[in-house]
Structure formats: structure tokens, C-alpha cells
Image (cartoon, rainbow, N blue to C red; front, side, top):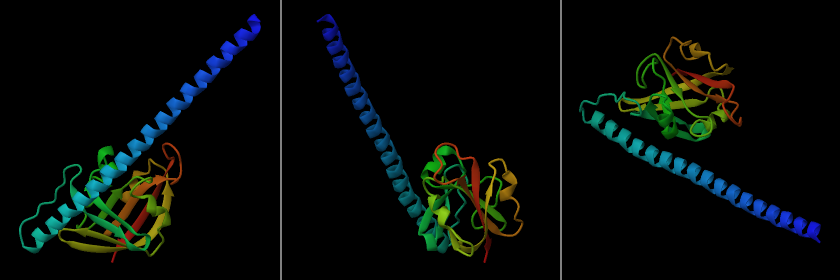
Length: 201
């Protein structure tokens, strides 16, 4: 009788443990989904606000008012579009984590959007640069700033090691280099970089 009671007690404890574990896992999942939804919503709101800010810069430029490039971290520099894959994203200054959660970032040490020279832009593979997995050679890239729109055509796509910092500075002519992590569906810190280079038309 005692052994049977002990077995029933252990069974009840096991059921309670499984019940609490299930509740904790469900709560963790809900919180994780809520965090992702909040992050994506915040990024979308920022993209809309940044787009309006760029439109204001363009209007000021058209009215011949002086517009200074906002080069502080997170400042709006322009809008990049790749029409064939339906990508449209605001380009911000810098590559800090907070900046790349809100848009794609201009890489320090490269030419600024709208200037001559090679422009480096980085973005996360799981948000704004997810579409780069579908980019092809000869695809058109548009880079709009307050001073106008520059057109680029994709030359090459390359997979490199993370430490290959020279990849952005290889081009000496006016061009555009886009960098994101690779592989696109890798879980955790990605072991490689996906690089797209385009020349100015």
C-alpha cells in the first residue's frame, strides 16, 4: 500500500512539473514573439519617419536651401532601392547595433551616399538585407539622397570571411558595396559575409 501511495505521489509531482514546464515554455514563446513583433514594428515606424525626413531634405535642396549631411550615428543619409527584388530601405549613418535594427548603415571610412568613390553599406541578413539572397548580376540599384538619385548596376557577388575588411575598399572607381552576414538562414553568429558590388552608371 505504501509503495502504491509513493508511486501516486511521484506521478502527481511529475504531472505538476510537466504542467509548470509547459506554462513556462509557452510564456517564453509568447514573450519572444512579442519582442520580435515590437522590434519589427519599431523599425517600420522608423523607416516611415526616416523616409519623410529624406523627402524634407529633398524639398529643401530643390528650394536651394543649404542641407548639411547628417553624419552622426543613426542620421538619415538616403534611400536605397533594388526594384527587381522589391527592396526599399532607408540608409542611415553608421553600423552600431541600434542603427542596424532600424535600417541599413553607411560604413565609416567609405564615401558618403551621393559622393564619388566607393560607398559601403551594411545590413542584417534577417531583416532589411534578407532580399539580397535573390540579387543577380546586372540588377539595378538606386540610391537616392537629397542631392539626387544615383544608379548602379551589380558587377559581382562574393562570399568572404568576416575579417576580410579590404573587400569594401577594393573598388577605386565610383561604386556601391553591400555587406551582410552569410548564410542567410544560419542560426547564430554567421561564419561568412555576403558581398554585393555595383558600379555607378
